[in-house]
Amino acid sequence: MDKIVIRGGKPLSGRIPISGAKNAALTLMPCALLTDEPLTLRNLPRLADIDTFGHLLNNHGLSTTIEGTHPDEFGRVMTIRANRITSTVAPYDIVRKMRASILVLGPLLARAGEATVSLPGGCAIGNRPIDLHLKALEHLGAEIELAAGYVKATAKGGLRGGKYVFPLVSVGATENAVMAAVLARGESVLENVAREPEIVDLCNCLRAMGAKIEGIGTERLRITGVRDLHGATYAVMPDRIEAGSYACAAAITGGEVELVGASEADLGSTLDSLREAGVEVTPTADGLSVKRLNGLRGVTVSTAPYPGFPTDMQAQFMSMLAVAEGASLLTETIFENRFMHVPELSRMGADITVRGRSAVVRGVAGLTGAPVMATDLRASMSLVLAGLAASGETTVNRVYHLDRGYERLEEKLSAVGADIERIGDG
Ligand code: UD1
Image 1 (cartoon, protein in one colour):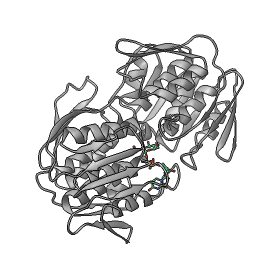
Image 2 (tube, protein in one colour):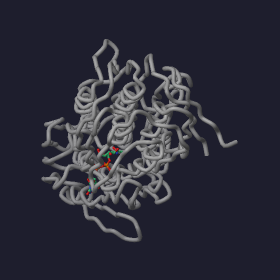
Image 3 (cartoon, protein in one colour):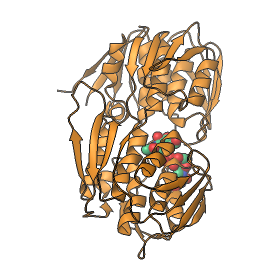
Image 4 (cartoon, rainbow, N blue to C red):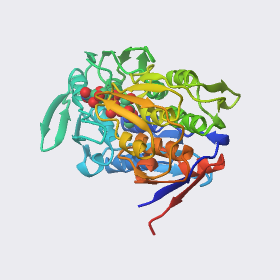
């Protein structure tokens, strides 16, 4: 397996292009199931998860065509077409690789009247049940059975509009419900929905395909089902988590980086906390400039659904705060098991104590390089950040986690002065 080797201590300086958002792409791709016309997605990131989702769609009988952007360019254009759905089964072998596969459930059900999807099971950051996905679909007229590790959902006469109030905010369950409701008969009202920018991206794409959705960006969506949707061309939003991660890279190394294409509005609470920690963030004509002026200061951060501080930025912030002056308190409220980077950061010299859902980070003068590994994507990024700031050499193992979510990480970082390389196992 590939490794990433970083010789730390170099302030970053220059421009980093921000790719299309992984989490937006993973909910835009299944929209292609909702129409027999082609859906063309621009600015799709080159990531392992996108390829896996493409294979899943191929397995349902969809064609996926990637247009030739030059290999040196970032982003891709993919046209997905579902003239015919040849299988409504999402098999275990694909779903186990990627939880987001559950996002075919709503659209398959809406278009084909049935869907059988393997249960995703647990994952490294907690249990992650799908009960809310299923309840929302039941409120739209689906019948759900669970057997042999699969969810079988059927809607014999088609889905019908309904009302569902989510008992807790779920990004994925909101996405499945929205993708189902756009083709349901009549009006649906979904309350306490997730308001993440990726949900806004989904709704905008569906509108471009002819869906009728009101309340986009609020906690209440009113959707009037239509008989058919049509094809569209849609550009995936920039990745706010990738942008936030590179902002932390500039901050932790004491550098200055321009995040090209990053959107200030989408990064709201991440930027608030960065500024509170002493990082200067300024909008530019092309994106955002991030600069650390003096030392970093400890802050208190609690993860929450959007517009709160994203759980997907918690690990990267922890690395940055490990070298801040004073103590920080990080509380994780979304996932129960999302501090697995802590023991690895401690091995690099960080002073972190975990008590239940909170971590107290006492800033240290410096980190030292070490061989490390993480069990999930954002935790792996937190180790890369720590390596960029540490003295000596850091080897990050299990690079496949990073390949799921950061397009050409080492290329982007070395272009701004990091000493980072990928070492293949061959
Ligand atoms: C999505 C993102 C992930 C991000 C997360 C929270 C994608 C592909 N992934 O994941 O990167 O960390 O949002 O911002 O977009 N829950 C239930 N029952 C359900 C569904 C969720 O109890 O049916 C719980 C989860 O266990 C978790 C919380 O709700 O505690 C939020 O999870 P959710 O927003 O659904 O996360 P995902 O959509 O899986």
